[in-house]
Length: 449
Image (tube, rainbow, N blue to C red):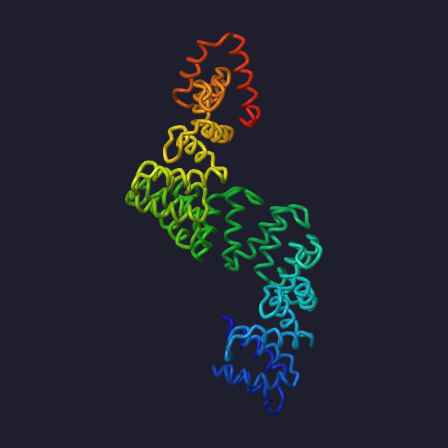
């Protein structure tokens, strides 16, 4: 792709420079077209040393990409600079890019902005897009969303796909412009219809969530599929989810497994976790605990909290692996520390039972509370048990009743019976207080109860 781009550039320049006799530049161009890149580089060098800005730009390109010469970023910077200083917009853009990335020169956002701007003001759409991003992020310049929108628009209107998606994102977030989902859809669509995978994904997301368009799972499915077919791992994951749940398509676990696998093999941690789930349940694939364990582990090692919890469950139960409570505790802890409420509940159980860790009722209560406050019904029930028995916390029938009352209301079997048992040893005043606390706790969404 890089070589084709250079050939196209040289062709345009050769026509522009056409003269009655062959120059070093002309001969360099002919050598390049014939595939003799070393000869092309040497002839471009002769022309560049005579001050030809186009030859300087092309020689820089060859050094940057190692075409016909050994790759050398410092030489690329040298020749891009000489070309850029003579006003060649493409060279200005490339020099800015090298400052931006720190290639062949010390990384310098301010210098990058300077050269992006010079190129952008000449109408270079790539430079306009990157200058807009510098404004959006506030790199090397004062953050300014309105200017970011201006430059994204200039670039997008010239057909720059990345700029179109970036402009759509600004409309989606309402940054530098009034939030407008319809306008975001417009720009995502223009890009998606050109085959841009990221834009196809974003457009699918808009249809799935009904933002800027009527919610339409079939349309979401269509665009996710187009993006997924191009290898977009996020689209592959979402496509799999839709097959698994039967949204916009007939439920098909085998298709879900197919797309989860494609995404998982690209390293998507969510897809790895869900593929593990499919193997564990035997949905769309032969049930296989070892395969489930494999994918859970890959996802868990990428930091996915759900996978860490699922891997811990496998170790605790000895499914697909030798039972190992210490490993279970390790993974429950990692998941719980990321805020996973199921893992917090499970970790509490390990502390309560002294499995894989020293028995510690106070620690169990601490994790149960975190989980209960996030709405995990089993944790709400078990926290009530700890209050009832005075384990790890001062015995308190009122709070035991409160948590059992909440767990019962949330549908946990047995919680109502436990609530009624503790009620038999409470006064009417205590019952009134416990019920009041339960109401208040629900109103506070279980926080700080």
